[in-house]
Length: 370
Image 1 (cartoon, rainbow, N blue to C red):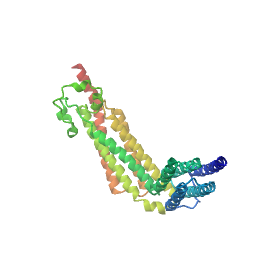
Image 2 (cartoon, rainbow, N blue to C red):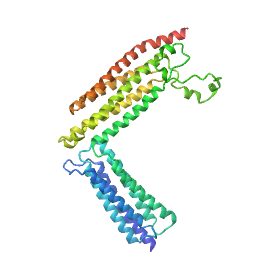
Image 3 (cartoon, rainbow, N blue to C red):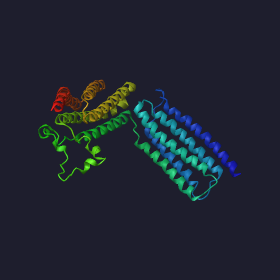
Image 4 (cartoon, rainbow, N blue to C red):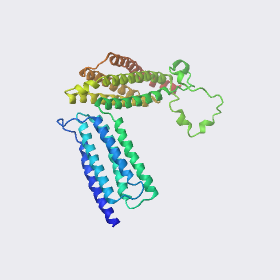
């Protein structure tokens, strides 16, 4: 009898799982513009109700193995609410661009995945009431709570989602900048004192070193970036200035688009508006890639040509950012000033790179001949 009941529960579970899976696929499709927009607050409220239902499921396992009728009723009720939750989230994506849709999809998938695990374990545990089961079910209920609670942290507008994505780019650029500032000159270089422009970043000399570290297999790894020539240090200093100013540009961009929040809610041509925001994010991410490229190129031997290419791409992307913001009516004085400062720093670096392309090979030839 118990085996038959469990087979029945497994069959019912499979039916519900398939239905939810099919419904979840709707999230991968762009909702019709004619569909009524659902507020994210409504999704959050439904998530709260779902977490309460998960609690009810867990309560079935407090004292004894639940009856098959109780488990069946609880499962059906839970999956019906989960399906309603999915339909609500689909309606919330009306007018959402790729970035916001991706955030919504990721949050909703966590809720679905945790729900599947909870229900599968409930059916699998039917017929037994071991101590492990009574401890495991409440833990799985907790994961559903966490997933539903996470909905409150999910961005509810395109601007919020895109702003967070831009912030991630800024954080990565800040990491690159930190690594660039850790570059150090070769202290044995006779031109070090005269040519280094970032002497403050240097490590203190260790006069007690007897040379034992030369035989250490890890010594070469620690020396990476510690042997730049004066010419390379000057290039690194100019590159640091460029990346610092570029970081300011990204921060001002984030501050500018944040001011569009009311405009997004009142915009009749939401599709064009969101397309422009998405393009700004793409430009921001492309700049982040080029900043990373510049940082990598500063390690000796420095790749002059690659740095020039990266500089050209950054300048071009910043120019397009200005155009995109202008079309949105959002070019602020602080953003334009940040762009201007970045371009000044960029010209200095490009000029230095052009000179270095000629000077460095000649200096290397002199060293060889001597």
